[in-house]
Length: 102
Image 1 (cartoon, one colour):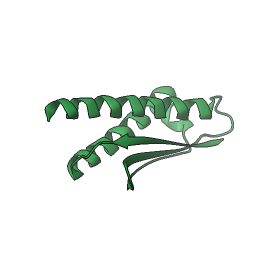
Image 2 (cartoon, helix red, strand yellow; image 1 turned 135 degrees about the horizontal axis):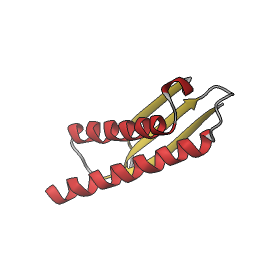
Image 3 (cartoon, one colour; image 1 turned 180 degrees about the horizontal axis):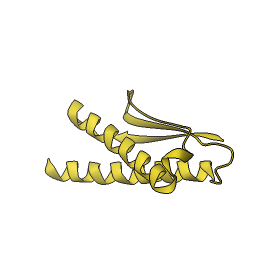
Image 4 (cartoon, rainbow, N blue to C red; image 1 turned 120 degrees about the vertical axis):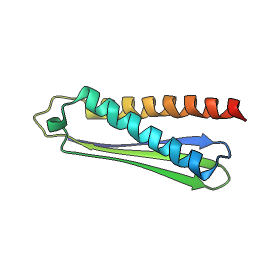
């Protein structure tokens, strides 16, 4: 069973260091959520990719790929969705703290 999930988050103007920090935060939150829900042996493959897109707006794109063996009884779609939601909340909270520092 495998699932891909993507979420786009609009970002304010941030420094390169802040952008990296936001991407790493999102990755850590997603991986923590997955491994809080599953044993390491239950995860066949996990990839969390964050990309910064600089078009008219600055966007953080988070892509999650999670594959578990067929015998693992878990709703992979829901787990990935929950992980993305938690990452979104963490990034939003971090952006608010960055905004108050300026």
